Image (cartoon, rainbow, N blue to C red; front, side, top):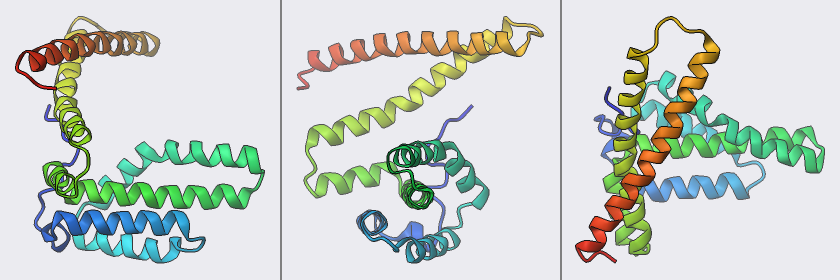
Length: 198
């Protein structure tokens, strides 16, 4: 299985051909406008729909990613609903959070992550933060491959079991993956320190 966080980042489209710094600046402007302006969600929504059309990223893919992240938006909006008690505020926060998530999904799927890191270095984001992001991105793929190997090994040893056993099996795989990733992180850190990384 090939794991990818940004499978559409190298499509040839007008949006993909824009420089990374311009896309990052536009995304930040859209995020700030969405969050700070009360009624900005309509023009921001129109701009995002235009970007989706120009980027040629499959709409079904974007909807799946949005549905995967939508619980974050609903969680924030639910907290506001419990504190403020207004359904209108709840709906407004859900819409704004969804637009912010779509903006980030579009940015990450129209710009390779390495290009974003280069822009961050150029604008003098602290080197430690950029290095941490680069390492995190790199090792997500390692962890995904390790998790897939463990899942496949578990599936080969399990025959015709019920749903509850499948959940227990998944929990076991996740727990072991956490332990292995912690051990791997310690080994990598020790190797980096041995090579003079600080």
